[in-house]
Amino acid sequence: MPQFKTILFVTFILFFFYGCEKKIKIEEKEIFNINELFNTTNQIKSTNEKKLLLIFGKEEDKFNKMLFEDIKTSLQIQRLLKESFTIYYILVDKDLQYKIYYKNKQITLNTKALLNLYNISSIPSLIFTNNKAEEVFKIPGYMKKEQLFLTLEFFKTNTFEENENKKKIFYMLKEYYLKNGIELN
Image (tube, rainbow, N blue to C red; front, side, top):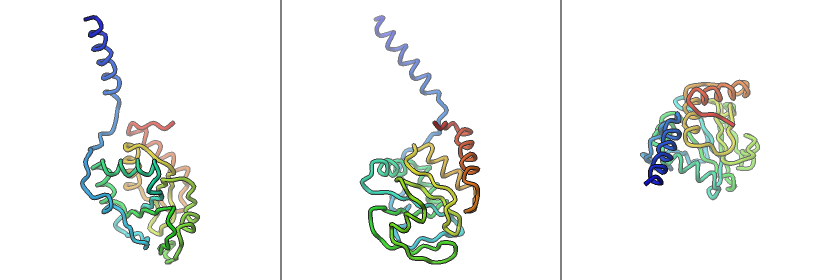
C-alpha cells in the first residue's frame, strides 16, 4: 500500500508541474484537405487580400513530414493559413519552372534559381514576403506546432517591407513568443 501512495503522489506532482505550464491550446482536427491550403501551380503571385508565404521542402524529409502533420492536425493553424496567407509549397528536389511576380515583374526561374533567390540552405524553410514577393523574413528548419501558430499569427498581424531590419523583426517575434509563453533556447 505505501508503494501505491508513492506512485499516486509522484503522478500528482508530475501532473501538477506539467499540467500547469502555460501552453497555447491547439485544437486537434483536420478541417481542410491539406492540399487545399497550398497552391500547387508554378505561377507564384501575391494577392492584396492575403500575405504570401513560401514553404520550401522535400516530400520524404522527416522534418517536412512533421511540419505537415502539425498543419494537418491543427484546426487553428489551418484556419490561419486558409484565411490569411497565399501559400506555395516548393519541392526543392523537383526541377520545375516557376513564374514568379517578383518586384512587380514576372520572371521565370527553375527550382535551383528560386532556391538561390531566397537563399535556401535548410528545409523546411518558411519565407514570409511582402506584396512584391521580396523576402521579409526567413525561418529555416522545423518548429513545434505552438511556435508555428504564433509565428503565423505574428506575420498575419504585422506588415513589413523587404528592406525592414531583419534583426528588428527577429526581436519583435522573440518578444511575441515570450509574451505568449514560448521560450527560445
